[in-house]
Image (cartoon, rainbow over all chains, first blue to last red; front, side, top):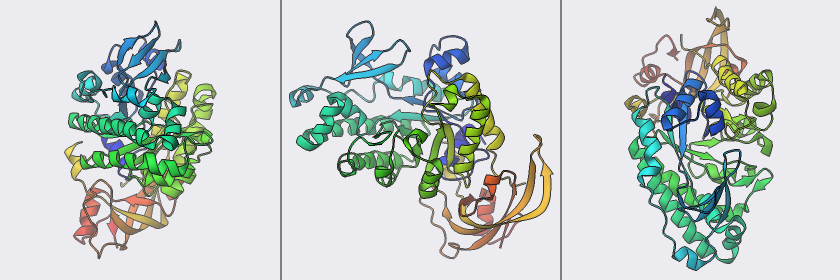
Length: 347
Length: 102
């Protein structure tokens, strides 16, 4: 089985030859450590993913700076201000859509902008190791809430719902077109990266989630399915109050099933394992950055034990390979999956 | 998506029991594998081919599936098991094989 077939098999709820491995992101400092130099382009990231033993690679749609504000901060094409911290991670600062008039004067970016799709185009063209190439988009929450500012957007849901819907519509329309363009390029799956919850609960009430987010997520899932490609939903946090609603949108997989948010992989597997593929959840807060190799192997085996039976499971960290993850633990996670993640054999 | 991935239709069934045969072999890493016979109740085709519907007379049909098991998570009951492509076609044309029969 090729890495791509392994991932697709799991996304379709089947048993591959062995548990597939996927990470939504490996932060650049880790890529640099593995490469031994700074990555120059998408090919360098591809080299790290493929030689590490991962079965897939994901490229997020990213902000495109339209105006530098100072040495470390910039305004992007969705009207959001970002800052590049000393750890080289770019963090959201605030939105600039302060009023309805600001939004009316705003023009959403072009999803077909060549720069947005350039990394995917290059990787798909040179996919010698046959990794599953995943296109990362957003859906109904992240862009609108960041354009307005989280508090203001959540207040809009109650005080100015028609305005909230207009912003959501702009984000959803853009992301559907972007997903279609990614699929036309040849991606094997689409992942949406909007978080919906804190560790103790969703950002909004389940009632508001059903009213403002679920229908739009469903619209995106259906557009992706119409193009014949599976849809992965990423969201951190404690999801139980809205998990039925998320699954009912028709998603094919859920990532990363955060253990720190009181979300047991086994419990999600028991409730939804027949319906969706699960992707997760090797602890990325203690085990991967601070634990030993032995703890990492034990944690990896726990995940396999809890979710791999019967297929429809992809192993990954419980978020991404961030700057503090120990390289030896990343390697141990991958090696343990290959050693202990073989499925039953025919002959 | 590769043509293979697009076109394969694979039957799936729920595991109701697993019989260990006692026949064992060791792999290259020293793991011990045991030949087992899974009893499955067929449920349908995998999501790979969403338009394919299982023939009504096959839904719920009980089949035996031969697999080699090693790790304890291989023995979980109630989970979905996926037939290989040739096993799927064998069931559809009602022709038992060495690894799938009824």
